[in-house]
Image (cartoon, rainbow over all chains, first blue to last red; front, side):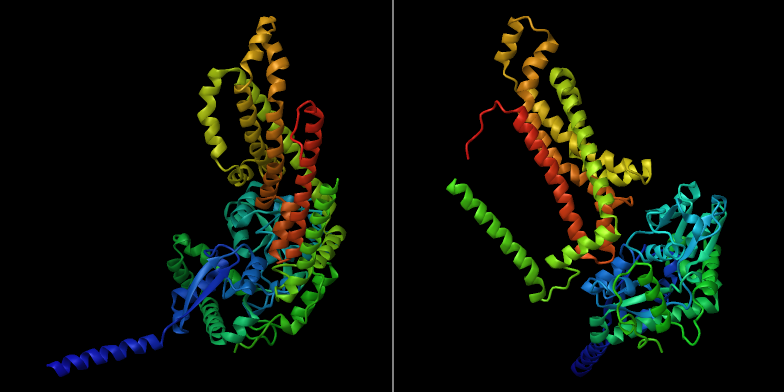
Length: 324
Length: 255
């Protein structure tokens, strides 16, 4: 009797210590905008479907004020990983932030330039004097807009750019207070959903602006590569799910993010848009990989238009080590 | 004379020490330039802002709204202070509401004003007016309550009208308090405009702080803060000059 009790206790102790050995790593991921936005579906899916857990990661989501702000927080160590756009390291590494992109979520550009069909705008050159909405002045979509304006010889003084947050972009565009916006595809869908016709143009038709990127500091990459690798692979897997079956992905997403309940059809439409417009792989680039020539082209574009003043070696801006 | 030269020398010496520490300590302690930019970083960035970021336009915009907000806010505060000072009844009736509004953090109204008035100059002007209003109102009101009653009685003995009493007795005796209130309000006016610009809008030094902060350009943020301090300082100095002229007859402590 005593023996069997001792054996049971010993077995329990071994079991407990075994689970302790499999302890998960805590990771904070900082979003550049509210985390329930459909643009961040791959992350919510990866979390909800347990891809992070399977990689041994205990992920906490937090929200920052835009891609450039996220990069700063990641560089300083307030967050382990963060989200921005592939262009973000080009803008902030020049200021001494040792961060780089570790995964690029798609071969096309994220930012869309859109305008009300009744605004009389036919292209970027007509933006002169108009009111344009962006998420915030600390977000890369703002810098993408500056790039588009520079391509037609306009500067931010020739237009009226307002940082109004995601809700503001949608509401003010519907109300007509903004004639144009620079942002993600789902906001355009929301505006059109309210009966306002919009026309849009992907920013990467003007210069090869990139898709969303996961950003990490050089320190985290050196000290915790398995965390970065596990996180990146989980998110890429989730994107694969979206590409394979957007309808099912939409259902799963809505179950994890109740703010969208009842809007499965809308979310599915948004996921299809991302699948066609943004996630497709670039030439010779597996999903998640950066193309150094593209980065160099974007950096040159920003330098030539005076939006960034210092060039940083391209190999410091990214790594493809975590993308198999 | 000896004393004042030695204090000036000590002051300047301290300034030089601080500037040297600012320039050489951060790199010595391995502090990156996006946390503490050195003096030369900031100066170089100031030149860049001047050339590329329309620094003058932004600074002038902030300065204009500061002065405008200060003028409107203090005028309203003073007028209401005098009116309430003349009527004990209305002062008692309105007091609790004035107190409530005074305690409410005015800068928290900025997002609300943006929703009401849109992304233009109105929200930051209103926040500034609100911030400036209360110190002036409270100071004037307090002064009106403590006017020397003997002087008022003397004026009445000379058959002076109510308005005459106000202009000849009450108003002059409240001037020192009014000036004190204006000085407090001048330092607060800059806060109102900065908060308004941080919360929304695309002009002004507050906007530059937001923009610079977003790309971890700490030098730009430092410079904007310095310029905001300069604006506040200029306004404050102007008020000191005015106070010296207006209140020249008051004996002051000799330092």
